Length: 367
Image 1 (cartoon, rainbow, N blue to C red):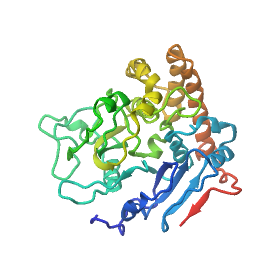
Image 2: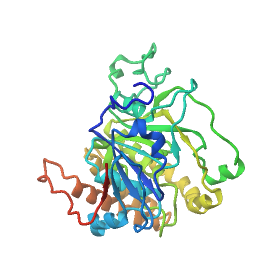
Image 3: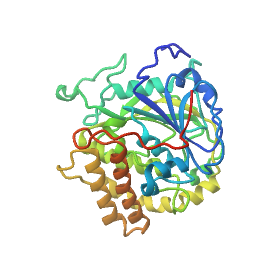
């Protein structure tokens, strides 16, 4: 696609862009050439009475906390409040095959030649090409133009598997935790690495939600960003929690996860002292969480994402509940999330198509 072109937007009718926000979405102006053909789902965090302005010309739905409560009822308790983790409500309410989610402090980056990077187009390329989780290709993604499988790569594995998640990166402000921010306050990521790779089976990674795309039909129910923010003892672990759960399930179901291109420009460093308060418990808990996910095993009876996720919730309660009572609450929220997901996304095999949720006074829509 030519720079700035939107005339041939791929998957125009199959992809929603989900944006969590607490402010006016002026940042969309920079993304207009790339985002305008697509439908936006905006999840407003915080005070629902605050009016959020969206630039003219975008096709969007805007949901606030009142909408979440109205649509989900008691199950709205599983959606975080005053935290960007609320974005996962957008994943649930969408009816498209693919999701791209981006933070509102992220802008269009430039490649080394100075050309604007169409992040969405690259994510779509990643999702539409296979992944290779069972054997590492030293030329990284073998399906890219100008690359192939190297000598010694088993021919029986060259077909690859379906790609469920495309994890993009960021230039400028790195995605650091608070302690690293404090000791490297001026550090900026200037390295553009022209590579995409499949994360191997059995390998976890810290997923960042600010530049992320996934196949909603393949892995959507596992993309729950947990209980974070207001009323919770932890924040800033929402995307990583989803990433650990998702990766265990992808490994079990034979799906792939890619990371690397595309880059976006992360423009704003959050306050490290505020971040430390949010992350404090997580910094200690992650030393228990990582071994838990590394050893998590799902039985062969878990043949769907929902079944895998419910089984994982049982293991969270059994093994992490002893770390802190929060994980018992989180395990219950994981179950509620799946129940809410299935209510809004009934399968044709088991439930007749449901009518759209009753809407009275919302959500806000724009064109």
